[in-house]
Length: 465
Image (cartoon, helix red, strand yellow):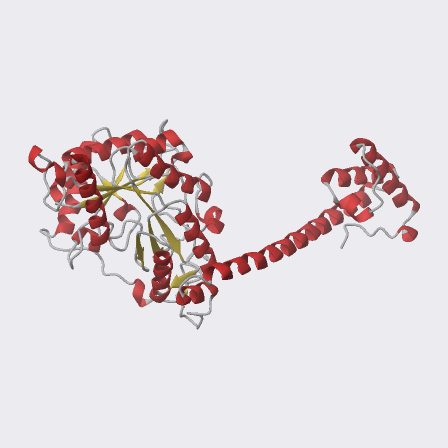
């Protein structure tokens, strides 16, 4: 409906006079011919509406009447524009769907069926319902999301790592973010490498993402200058082959912690021996240095800070986009967004190649269960591959407390398998996909370790020749 009914014969003299004054004022202001299309004339801009209601007042209408008409006009104009916007989105949606179908026609039939919703479409095949709130006891957590609490004897690797962390005043994202895989990763076993994710620069973040359990503050404690050395000491005792470093966001610092991050990485690469042996590097085993993955903040997209970490000697540069582009504002802190995260990943790879001469592996992670659609995930993966991202992980979002975002659905293991296959078909170097997978979950798995070792060997061969 038009904002106002412009049926001239039925209008009182005052209303006709108000419309005439509005036309003349607007035409004089814009120096353009007077429009005789009343609908487009008044609803075309805020200025036109403002002039129109001023003309009503000048034509003798009472203040209450003018305000009532103003309210009605604003409401109907908003509805009119919303209707047009939805219509345009619908038309655009049909075009996007057609383009998606064309792209998927070239993919594996099982993947295309999954994305379009024709497979795993039965009840609870793709996902099972999640509780409406933390007090809802009518919906139970699925069996595939249940984990045994971590623990062990005093001599177990889990207990040793935990006690040593406490002694050296180090934090892990495993504990701070309440990761369900803590016991499995720290303990190793079953042919898997024992892995821990050290969280440097303190345990308090300057941002407040709606999914994260890490503490937040505008003014966290100052950095520990001994932390780079303490991290090297702790890791040298554990006998790890692969270590993940991550950090909280430190927007309160001038360089947002990039220098501290780079110093910690360089210290590890120079001093700590890898290969599961532990100890410090000597002149005889320089080729056994530990592999380091850095899961970094976005540094507000500042190139010089991204470059500082990218050129620090790390082996894998990771930065999480967290969710699909459509849910970024819903889940992340306002200072973070999809485009900024993509820029971080692209910049790190480019700088490492152009300046350091290294084919740096880049990695990211996506949470599922926040209300994303299959198509949105597929489109997000395409954007990640276009940005040159090599590794992606998928995991189920779990609500830490009632203050955080609620879980919209529990995605089934079968659906996670399909997302993994989808990513592999798109050309990702390595994919980890499962309900309990987290961004650093089994980060030192056989494939990734071997890929890095192979690249190191090629680099040494090229140098010697």
